[in-house]
Length: 106
Image (cartoon, rainbow, N blue to C red; front, side, top):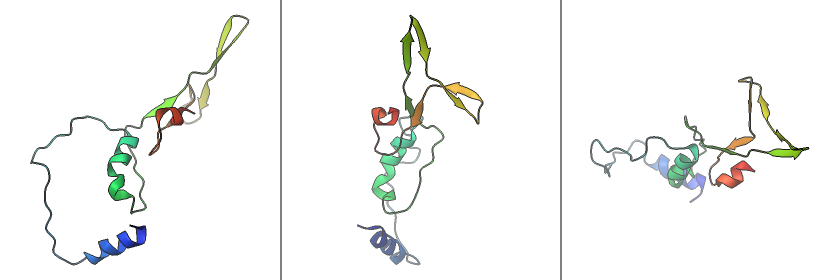
């Protein structure tokens, strides 16, 4: 189903009375405390694929690498300076929908 077809289907329900079936009992608790942005995006993709949305998460999963080199028996690490926080960190990136941890780190 395309975005326009889905939008037309949603619009066809406007102003109509519908019945919703609840598939979880009252007080249902998810088993995990925190979900990463990637996990949320994968879980809601079946519905959200028809809309132009962006999932923002409080707990984003990042993946990176510790890059180093050895010169004259001395180890040097690659660090990046973060302008906003004024701190140094290892190179990394936040996982996006459909990415593996390895793809994110690259």
